[in-house]
Image (cartoon, rainbow, N blue to C red):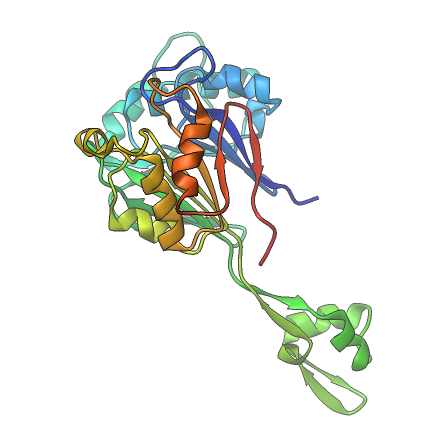
Length: 303
């Protein structure tokens, strides 16, 4: 059964609190589990979430500040302990390679799995698998930072009534999908006659950035947008100084980009009530989820 959902592992920014672990999230997308920005303590949060480290297939780092990557060594070592022998793909800004190399060699205790490195130095597609495309978008932070977008290709939805009206059933449906047309009772039926366009589902992860075009490009039309919301409205000057977004800006980002559902995370420790962030973002966008640690948020169903 297809499962497409975000597992929120941590929602803190620089300083974890009693109720918020460092930033981390996992995207379950069918057979893939993409770990995003594993901050300190991610291995333990995976345990609380009931998500096995061995299920992780890919890891994406937006940047190499510690609150977004210091959990990487523990997660990789846990994967070895859990018997993972397959390769794990790791995507990160190219300028962070020296830090990545240190993280991969952080202790003498346990080896890591075979980690395939994908340093990224420009916006655009960086990998594809199973019809999915992973793209990077340049963000505006204090170090080189890339957000991530996962895009499923568009397809077609078969229309049962249209198929029945033309006498197309059983294996003939699959044949029509493969060939694009089918002769039925002496008449050629085109795929377009019995189906409709189906947009591919999409996901974007925008972390640690000022307002920028790269964030808008990543979020354009996505079904699920995860955005940092470090500060509240009224703290725009502070957000700009430290290269972050307010919750209101995250809401505007989702609205202007046409994202369907917005998940807020990466909160400043000065604000313990997540509903304040939801309030500010909700002034701009109707579907806002202010995440708490261990929340699970579904990717919206197809349009």
